Length: 353
Ligand SMILES: NC(=O)c1ccc[n+]([C@@H]2O[C@H](COP(=O)([O-])OP(=O)(O)OC[C@H]3O[C@@H](n4cnc5c(N)ncnc54)[C@H](OP(=O)(O)O)[C@@H]3O)[C@@H](O)[C@H]2O)c1
Image (tube, rainbow, N blue to C red; front, side, top):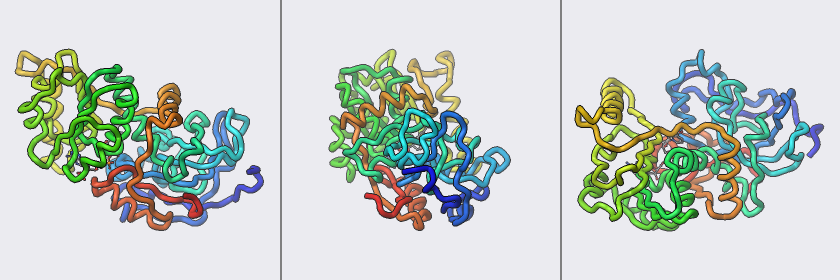
């Protein structure tokens, strides 16, 4: 595709102010297509975007003066390079990637638009085995899983991993990455999703609807104990960590995607309680296990290594549902239900598979 065929205006979903998607999102028909690219940036014609909880969470809590709204919604994309701008990418090349939160605050770019400008480093080639809707949701949750397991927990081949939330998108990618290097993987999910999570290679299963997960694990601890626990739901129940001496090996590590109180005073009290329990000194009854928080951040080396797992077919995408560009509110309702099994995808180009 030549740069001449790029239109001057485009359709895009803009976040107008802080609030809920149903109140603050608007589909605009006349948003300017980025016409100036900085060195190292490319213009992508977006084919499909994928939703992430961070999209509606930041929309709901970050004040306008920090978020510099209006800006385009969402982060994950797959598309075609419309202007390679002298980078290592080529016009017409199929890629996938993401606009990290920090970058969006700076550039106002997002994936729920027909075109976006982004550093070439934030794109990798889309394998021809994957369709655009399959590839759209690979990056943000997959990179989170990669960085949590390999950069933070230093998971090694043959080790034993517990994932709380095996059916979250992050959990699905974490399972596949750990299995790819030969780890034993135990996950929690609701019983109705057991077959689904086992299809990604899960070895052992805990049904969280049958009682608190920490109690089930303490009653029936693995032998040897887990080397790593990855909390991939995000919540304020700290018992999985505070009880973990029963099932996490000495020297093992607990990595969490975050503390996400549901709002209101009780939520904040719960979060403070969580922080206290995570940091409680052993003198005051704190437990002898390390914990760390993962905050996904762009890093090219991790992105390249992660994309090799994808290219080799060792990490496969999971798509929960696909929505039309006009039906973004329904896509938000689905991701906000916290019931999706895999990625919630939006076709930006209606003709793609
Ligand atoms: N810190 C970071 O950098 C970072 C990056 C990415 C994501 N996150 C956070 O990670 C979390 C997961 O994100 P995601 O996009 O992977 O979520 P997601 O795909 O939307 O998660 C939906 C899944 O969660 C499962 N689930 C809900 N409650 C559960 C529970 N108590 N125990 C086990 N499974 C449960 C649901 O299964 P059922 O229907 O069976 O309940 C459903 O399959 C979110 O809190 C997100 O904000 C953080």
